[in-house]
Image (cartoon, rainbow, N blue to C red):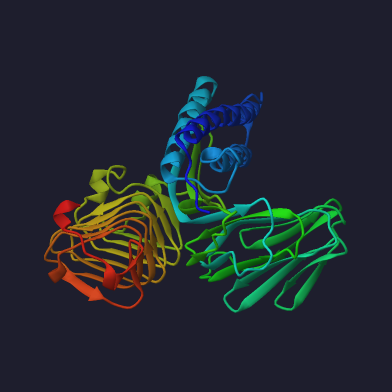
Length: 450
């Protein structure tokens, strides 16, 4: 049953989030004080300074996980609404930064960058067949199934593409059968739990833990989840990115169109070291060691060419004007590069199998996005600038053509709207989804209203 929080519940959640912000800050500040109170801090090597920075960053990541689970629900559930994330994280960063700057020469920045949306389902009992709980999901950020001590077994079937994995929770002996390769899990005959994050399945009990890689994170997936408890007692919870179908039994707690895998950027700077990371909540974190100074050094002439590299920098106001000369900067990202920051240039923009977390704006000839690229922001073309997006690309914001330049979409998901005159639109090619609708059913927006 899909439910919505009441006004009273929302007020309670605000209070809970405020309390949690305070408690998580206390824990992180204790760690910071330990790091910076060392009498040998000035003699630390760069390696030791980096290790300390990583400790602080890891603590912040732990805090963010706690905040995410409690932001929208007093029951600590693995989903949140985007507006609540902004509010809670903003409060956390403000108070955390205030504590840090009081006693140390350190600066911390924590930002919510983007989030993958989907559905969250849970129940305080286990389903007995009845079909999949989740169908055709791009990812499973979070899955947990808890089976009480019982003679009845519980089966969790996870199908990813052509591969099927079955985890069986049984007091007489649990196991994970992944594509015919069986892993016996001797974890005890009491309460047993199956969980999965980052594509790794884990069965745990009072006597031990066993783990199995179920699917490779980051690869295109079409994932189904089915649970058959055969009358056993327990509970389950699962979140899914962009599932095509969510089982909505009358007893189930269901949320749809919510954030299930947020990404945060964390920047920690002290006199000895600067460390930046981009961290999906349920995914591999990524060190972003390159800032605007690196970008300025890398720009050949007036262009930037990144291949398999990462950087955090806004091309709007953080690059030295004498170097960037925006006009006439071509921006080329390929080979799974990642840029955290906005692009605003008079040059061409080419994004191939890479990610930009920020808006893209160009007043040149072409904006070309292809090969499973991801743009977490808007794409805005000035007058006479063409937009060509294809190859399984995902755009989480809007696509805007200002006029006299074409907009072509082919095998693309645009989660926002498309603002373009019909005469400038290249038509509905294959596999184009705009704002949740098939391209053929979608009504283009007037670019003057963007």
